[in-house]
Image (cartoon, rainbow, N blue to C red; front, side):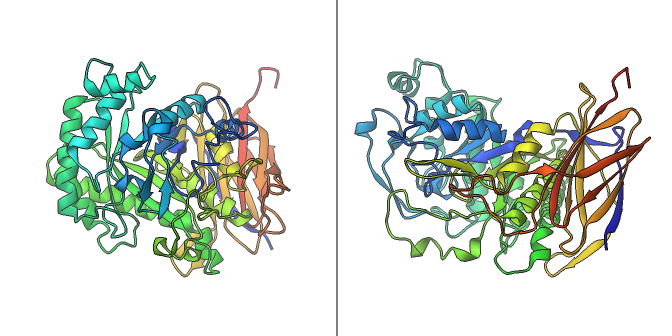
Length: 504
């Protein structure tokens, strides 16, 4: 039997504008994300720079606005100088993070060329694990200074006349984690991050800086780490980072489908911590959040870095995503939009092959995984203001997160076009939902797309790349300001409304 739910969409009740940087991605030197992912000289579809044009096209279709590079764990042992200059002169190094051989054929300038072709903003991470303030300043000078200094002229000698002008910088990565090269206490990291931030702001006060938050909410220092780091860095940084991965491997499907509720709790916990520090310091500044690693990851299937053999371009955590995974990814995007007033940056990890929406084969095709579709449609249609949406619905008991609402939703309103878009997930595994909407006057339904399947384990592959795609849904049916539609069990939905034409 179907459940029922109700919600009201009113452009007067706003959370804040849609942040373009919410639709970020992540390219790390890990597995095959870079090599045979975005970069594969000799591939039939590679351009003159060795960049896979099929992956570039899919990246643009995905709607990615920003890409974080070069890590991730990789960055904490990385020497950026190894990846610039003539390719034949670059040294091979051991990447201690993923026990891989790094040939450095793809580096800073190749990434910037790729980002320009993909139409994305670069977000650079600094190595504050095995390096420090001086090396960070050198990288920023090489990257951003126009010319007339040793490092800016070195860049120009490498064929890049104009500065890359990167505006967004991460002050290291996950340095609370003992798996990180250069792992630090909160006090150690806070001091280093503060000194680095102070120097970078002296170089260019307009740079936006992200301090490392906890690696995940299960860390024993979660909350306390953010408080101590922000007390040291509050007036010099603009964001604190959050990372979260959701693992469906334990068979607890109800908790997995409720992952967005956990993500929202994490966002609100760190927001409260940041605001507490700001009040304690009597600061008028408000720190925003950078959720710069998030995704579904079958992490329990990964036996850890120490189990890996030294290898070049290994097939590493190339998870294949099914229908349920796509619904969860859609719910996580809803959560980010619901918190757009505080989350200013978000990066799905990663872009290609490694827990990614895009998969490739060396010398072969590229295709869209199931999780590609909710991201692409959300990035395409979320415009204008995010509206406050609070459904009245059934709740589902979960082992991990307690009671979670069966319906998870947000909406956006584009003041320029008048279009109103609802993004909604039915988490219920057992019943469809009859959803009743109250709308502003003067709208007509345009489209209802639903991502679901009778076989929730269905996946896309190189041979069958379109097995899982969004299809027309059942609705909406409009009567005045009321609309109704049916949501299938375990489904992600997008419903679009446009203003009536004068003739209507």
